[in-house]
Length: 387
Image (tube, rainbow, N blue to C red):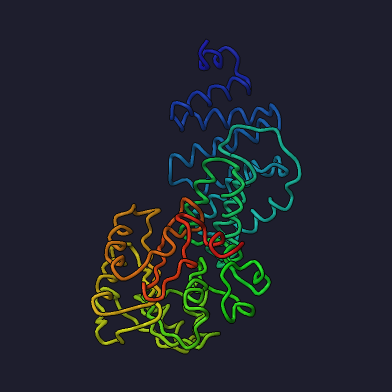
């Protein structure tokens, strides 16, 4: 018997719900909404009413332009069974989409705090408590709780809650970066450091995947070196030259296309920073030799164009080049390797946060290269630096 005939013969909460499900699965959302609301009004059970209100809300959402109604229904559902999580998840998700991040963060924090027991599952596009955790991470990022957002996304990525959320968290990590603690060197890690250099026993690093530590490793903790940093971004957080300047007395020049970052540089750094397009900049105005070159711009094609231009008349001892192979393929990785391999040794290829997210190559000039510096292809930076 069809759901419609069943409903005509017996207009109960159960038959109304079954008919609503039939219409929803056939994407007839307006009809589905009517029967979900009818089923909810028949007071079959609190769980039934709760489920019907959520599904009616989701149908309204799929129709578009009814966000106020969607939220009203979800709040009503949450008031019926406030101990459950599904309605609150959708509320938080929608608040994030509306850029109401403070509300989203507060509600998600409350839900995560009260989470204690496993609940009877219902079918309403909710995958588990990690769904709310993900929304908290998203709200955290937009509220400026940067490190909290990274930690949350990394927890979701490494915990394998579900394939979909693992993929979503991984995508976010590629954009916002991994937790600082993963690649943060402190003196407490000195004894496990594979390649020790003078000064390593008393420093803390700042770069994203320990590029600053690689430079100092390759140059044996050199004092008063020089650098050319193209695509400098933030002057401190995840910056490759701040440690060199701060604790080793290096001088150098940083270049970035973002005027906000340059303004921050001039407030927090001693060495000069230039607001310029790295592709158009006249590098012949600069010194011919530097100890360290960083090229890290977006997209990889831009980074490669800059690398070509810089290498025309410049010499470096150490180079870190971001090719972003994990998201752009290997074209510019191979081009950069062809360009640099004449005078430089690819010392640590395919640097990444993990074995799938490779984005950078580390090079050393042949004149200073030693076998001790070699790293294994596609190893994480932690595996390169620590026993």
